[in-house]
Image 1 (cartoon, rainbow, N blue to C red):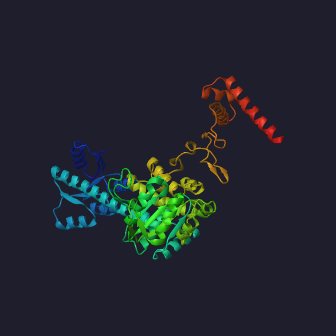
Image 2 (image 1 turned 30 degrees about the vertical axis):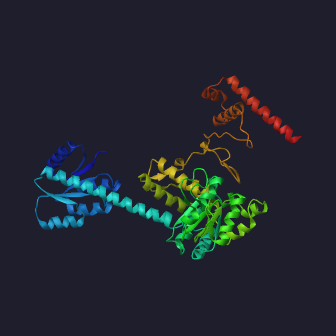
Image 3 (image 1 turned 135 degrees about the vertical axis):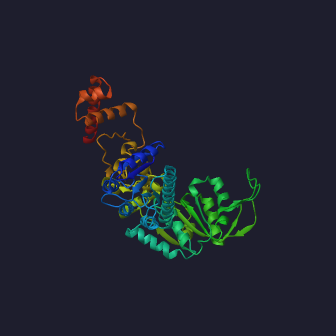
Length: 477
């Protein structure tokens, strides 16, 4: 992009000379013969120029006055003052008011060019510093604290704070995406073992035949492929915290071994006969109802009691709607910085969308939706259209406890009947029915637009109507 320079001087010859010089260097120049016009443009857009060249003696407002007002509107704008006097007082006053540099007339253009280049580099560095500060601030706000103000969420947070100083086993339950690992990290960072490591593993993501080795480690040659000894996660989490996510997916044999480890505070690597002492706090979590799993004999009751010393339940996002917008704002800042975009907020329609959306995937789904909206946005505000169109979702995703989401007029979703996919013939019938409704019953127009013969359209519609009639007759019988 070409750099934009404002030349503010009541002397037209000076303006023309400056413009002619910088145009050769591929700059865009805007001329102003008075300060008032320049300030008016700056009020409309604080990024209208990259650097400003300001004469000291202007008709109504002096160059010093212009610098003072411009710095209030655009603090990062570098301004070079052009003056006919070599007075040190004038230079000091200009610098104190925010000028980056000053040049004495008659203008020495190589010197002016160097001053402009330095001013632009200074602005670039200021932007980098601001971005780094924003990244640090965003990282602290997202990862250092937990955002939420709903009563049920605050109740869970209060329990987490109270038990963080103990070494008791903590069990976190809640739907997928509610932030169970975030809570586990919070407890670790608030507790006595925060100086130790925080080690996390998703038990459902590791094959069962490898999970025992991951948890307890193995000796060299313990099995095919074990070319060297390996520390288990219990040992890696020594003097820290081990977080076992989706613990409800552990097999019964592995549950028995985990129970023994929790009881004896010792582990034995696969392929060894040596027991090793461990000292780490255990936090476990699952989206399953472990009490139901115990009743179904898929989870050991004694292990459940051992894990469930301090239970914490996290509510779904739809049960803490007052937290949706604060979370979305935090995610927006985070992803705006990461993607280098200047998105500043959400418009009213986008906020309404977020508050009424079901958020089946909870906080994780909200975070992904905001990231996608930030990337797709073409303005300074996120709009409803920046979120993924509902038409690209499956019919099952569109279901809520209250029924299907309302679809836009131009949105066609292929429905599903139970787990059975529709045939192509049935999908075509559904699409023709949708197209006719979209064109408000204009069958001839619909036939032309979707590229089929009018007779074929009528036959398809008759077939759909006949099918509906048969279904009604079966129900009434």
